[in-house]
Image (cartoon, rainbow, N blue to C red):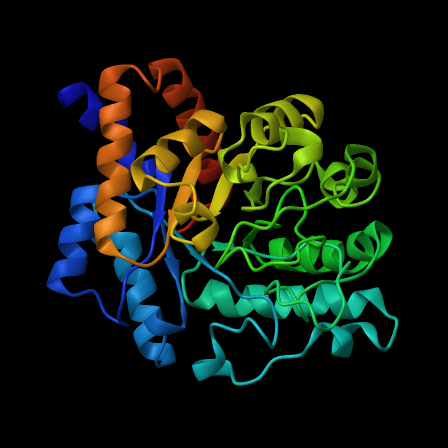
Length: 335
């Protein structure tokens, strides 16, 4: 067990908590799990002063400094609304036809996040807008374009601006949820696009920017063209993460799952098994965004899987090297 403590199994988890301040229970959770990252939501954000204090506390009060992340996209997904008010929408940014405005938007977002001690933005959305206005897949008004070129042009510029301000970008939801007819927060969507089409369209923004991307979030869609007919989310699929993203596309950075507490994952059965399967599939860090119970459960499941040999030490160390590389690049210089 001492060996497992040394390996910091918790660093493979990105967890959420409630409240704008760290309570005794939250301190206990963070000290027990020692997560590699924490993710903030609107429930954690009240005033600028409180958020700044929270960010500094997360940086300084724990033995293992967690990465701090947020979903800060634009007006619809605006976790900082209580502090900065309404933001631009994607159509607002695009309507003047000047891509520099998208980069400026990214830089403005980055400056806000920097002052609140946030390291990573789980953005931009790289999904193509392949759905109509009546489709409820949680992506409406969040996509930067209907084609790969549009997404590369606009979302790529936003990403550039964000990172120029020292904030790591984490585009999502690989390999592409634009063809989903269901909301993965509720159900597992099946994306019925051919392998050839996805490689030529949905995956292109990732492939073209691959050399500069340091983190990618894998979504919870099922892709029969890659993974067969048996329902399995991309986040649990070695074919999607290891074979496609790592081997075929050559991605060497950090792979994160979307929130493991979403409905698409609960449909798979055991939460413990899903956590282990995501890691076995090639994910480096699993998001567990809402409940302390599930964070503890994921931590215990990963620990047991290492103890039993279900997760090899080789796989564990390989992943930890990627996490450390990411930390060295994005937070080693931050006080």
